[in-house]
Image (cartoon, rainbow, N blue to C red):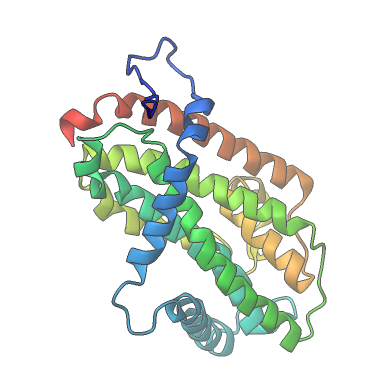
Length: 277
C-alpha cells in the first residue's frame, strides 16, 4: 500500500520583529527564484527577430554615438584610452544597473495576479530581476573583453572587477527594492523612474572621466556608488586611475544604508500589497 506523501504546512502570521529576514524561507524557495529568472529571460526575447543580439547591439550602438558626439566632436578627454573602449567600459555597468532597476520597479505590478492568489516571499521578485540582468551583462562583458584585446589595453587591477560588480548588483537591488515597493502603492513611480535614471547617468562618469569633477566636489561626487563602480571597471580594463579606498568605503556604506532601508520598507509594503495592488 502506497504511503501518503507528507505535505508541508506553512503558517502565515505577522512578523514579531519589525525587521527580520527569514533566510531559511528564502532558501526553501530557491527553485522558484531560478524559475523566475528563467521566465524573465524567456519573456525578454520572446518573439524577437534578433533575440539576444540586442544585448550586444544596445551598448555597441550607444558606444558609437558617444564616440562620435562626445569623443570626436566634443573632444572629451579619455585619459589616453581609445574612445570605444572608454565608453563601453562605462556603459556596461550602467546599462546593467539601469535595466535591473527598471525591471525591479515594475515586477510587483506585473505579478499582481500571482501575488493575490499564491503565497511566496515577495522579495524573490525584485531579486529575480536583478539576477536575470547578470546574464545580459555577461554576454556584453565578453564584447568588452574583445575590445580590450583589440585595442591592446593595459589591464589594471583585475581584482577590482568582482568588487565593482558586487557593488553594482547591491546598488541595483537596494534601489529596486524602494522603487518596487513605491510603485506597488503609487503607480506613477514607473513614469518617474526613467527621468531619475537619466539624471543619475549624467551624474555618473559614463560620458566623461571622473577626474574632470573639481577637487572640492569629489567627496560628494564619490558618494554616488555608480561613479565608483564605473571608475572601478575602467581601472580594471583600461588601466586608468581608479577610485581611492575611501571612495569604495563610502559607496559601500551608502549602498548598505539604502539596502537596509529598502528591506524595511519592502517588508512593510509586503504585508499590505495583496490588498492594495
